[in-house]
Length: 294
Image 1 (cartoon, rainbow, N blue to C red):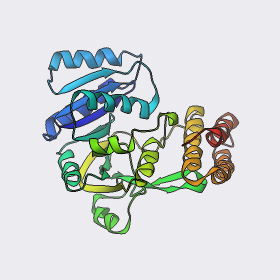
Image 2 (cartoon, rainbow, N blue to C red):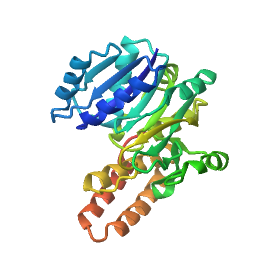
Image 3 (cartoon, rainbow, N blue to C red):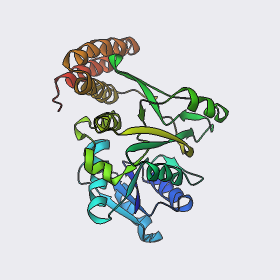
Image 4 (tube, helix red, strand yellow):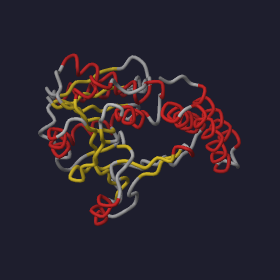
């Protein structure tokens, strides 16, 4: 069984649109699991009403009793599916996306040929049709930063992008993998709460010989932008905390501490007119260095 997993947080309308597009265009998705991450805004009631009306037999709606972040919400759905559905392959997909063609079958074919990999899609802007990212991005660990590959390029540039670049990680916006892989390497690290969870997961998987690959035939559309435009104290704190914690795990404490200083400087330069935001980023950067990792 092939299971798509959609995590909702205060965006029931978008989640329903995403699920309906999968139902309409992705026949090799056998079951969809929708998880509400304790939205507390009426989302759960809206999603339940949609299911009651449509009566989709191959959609399950779950309520996570707490909001434990992107990793925690997705892990909640993955654990439930592994216990109740006997899945072979998973497809984690952002709720603010939709498909207008069968975006899953190309991912499935790649996994059936080699299930020791993560695979991802081309992510296109719903507004412009141009690339938001070629599957994922490049990391600059010492700076605690990442760059999306192919952002704002036209579809005509896709072949060149494929030949000249490969991402360091696949975005969690569209990430497919085998159920066997989760049993081998474990699930996502919930201590991140937000940001870097899927990056950490893929880097941990490398220790097991697991690779990552973009499948250009798989394409989905994303509302808004993958690069967050509105910066907040919440964003700076959790984004910087995640970056330095990631560095501590994979490059060591000294590297993480150095990156915390550099990331703090970058954040301060960007937010020099907003010292409260800058301070949140600085606190997050050094908190990540202090957090425990295995």
